[in-house]
Length: 223
Image (tube, rainbow, N blue to C red):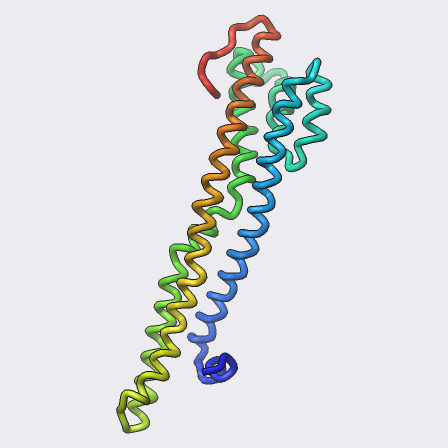
């Protein structure tokens, strides 16, 4: 059955399910293309910016290098957090220098990672729910197809095959939405994990450098 006829013969619930699956599919593919582009840029930035930072002669030059290479702002928040002065008269200012750096770098790192993980929850939710939404559309379509066949007063394989086959399209549509979402979630999760390891290493090395510059022993563990 062609789509216009399927749409015209469906009720409000069938149309709502179809529109919901369509909206889910659009969201998935928008996230796929946008996040693939974003994470590719972030990984490229990290590969260029981190060596350029450590190759700089001083911290001012290192900051300029980050401003050039860190296009998506993954490293600059860490540097800003590490070099900012704590507010006077606060518990943060009263703490040890190492604790201050650790706290600020941890908060900045969490902020950057939350931006890199944007959309992951939506991909996981769509991947988990789309098959069941499609299955609901199938069950609803079969129910109404059987009602129509019963009202017609005749039952045959030819009369059942068409409506039931059309209803099963909703299950296929649910799977077509869910499979790309699950695959994208897994791929992007791995790529975010690679970026997270790079950012944690940069934060640890930055903290160690600043503590040594202040004449304090660097912590052997990562922040």
